[in-house]
Length: 513
Image (tube, rainbow, N blue to C red; front, side):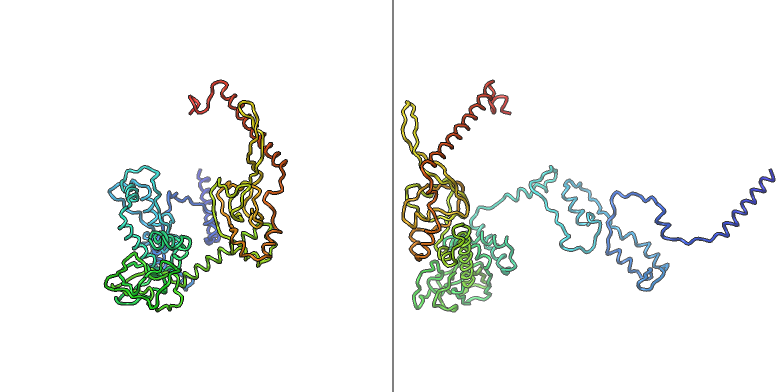
C-alpha cells in the first residue's frame, strides 16, 4: 500500500515538472473565434443613441491607435463603465391611461426610432409619417379615432364664406413664385378662378388652366398709387381700388376705345375684393403706362393676382402651335397623306377644327351631302349600306323593304367623305359612331381657301368611302349576317328549352340564391 502511494506521488511530481517546462502560448484572437459562447437571447434588440456613443468614445484617455494613444487609462476606463448604460434608449414610461388605438402605438415607436433600432441625426427622407387611413378598418373604443370622420364631412354651404375662403387660398398660393408652385397648387388656383364670373364667361377652361401657371402676385403697400391696367389682368385679393378710366375691364377683345380715354369719378366707383380690372390682351397703339384700364389704390397693402398680357400672348401662341402640330400629325397618320409635300399639309391643317360625337350618332346618311371631311383622331364608327330585301308579313304576303347592313368599320387615323365634299356629290354610305369619337373636320366652305394643286392632290389620293361595293356584295353580306343572327337565336332557344325542361328557372325559387 505504501509502495503504491509513493509511485502515485512520483507521477504527480513528473507531470508538474513537464507542465513547468512547457512554453506558455500567448492569447490569440483565433482562439476566441473558435470558442463558442452561449449569449442570452434578446426578444428585441435595444435601440442605440449614437450621439451618446460618440460622446463616450471621445473621452480623454481611451485607447486610440490613430491618435497615438496605445493604452486606456484607469480613469477613462472607470468613466466609460459608469456611463455606458446611457447609450441604450430607455423605453417610455407608460401613462395611467390605457392605449386602445394600435395606430398611436406605432406613432410613438416611430418617434423613438425603435423601428430603425437607432436614433440620432437622420435625413428628412428617412422620416416617415404615420398616416391614418379612413375609414377605420379595426374597431376601437377611443372616440378620438372617430372624431376626424365627423369633422371631415362638415362643409359650409354659405356662398360668402366659400368666397372668403377661396380668396384666402388664392393669396396663400399666389405668393409663391410660378416655378415654386406644384401642379396641385396650380389646379387649386384653376378651380377657384373658374368660379369667378369674368373667367367663367370670357376665358375657355383649357386656356385658363395654362394661365394659372404664369399668374403672379403683386402687393402695393401705400394708397394713391396708380396701377396700369394695360399690362395685364388683375384680380383684387385685398383692399379697394378706384378706376381712373371707363371702362376699367376689357371684357371684349374687339371693343374700340375712345381717344382720349374717358375718365371715371374716383369718389363713386370702387373695385373690391373678388373683382377684376385690366386686360388680358394688350391694347394696340397704347403704351404700358397709358391710363386705359388703370386704377388708383385706396387702401394700404392692396394685393392682386395678375396675369401679364405678355404671358397671355405667349400662352395663346403656344396653344396654337401645339394644336397645329397635332393636326399635322393627324394628317400624317392617315395613309393617303403620308407622301404629301409639306406645304399642302400645312395648308390643310390650318382648316381643320375639332369636333366630338357621343356613341350611336348618325354623322351622315347615305344619299345625302356630307357636312364635312372627317379625319378620325380617336374612336370608331360603322359604315352602313342600304339593301332591298323581301319580307314576309303575318298574312303570308311578301313585300320589299329597305334595310341597313354594316359593311365595315373606320377607326383612328382614317378619313371619309373627301370626294363627296370636293365634287359636291352625295355620299355612298352612312356613317354612325360606335364609340365616343373625336374628329378633325374641314367644312365645305373652307375648301375655297385651298389652291388648285391641293384640291387635285385630294382628288388623286382618295376614293369614295366603300363606293366600290356592288349590290351583290351588299346582298351577300346581308345574308351572312341574317344567317348568323338566326343561328344565335336558335342556340339560345335550345338552351332555354333544356334548362326549363324540368321547371328549373335560374334566378327564381330555390335557384335564386
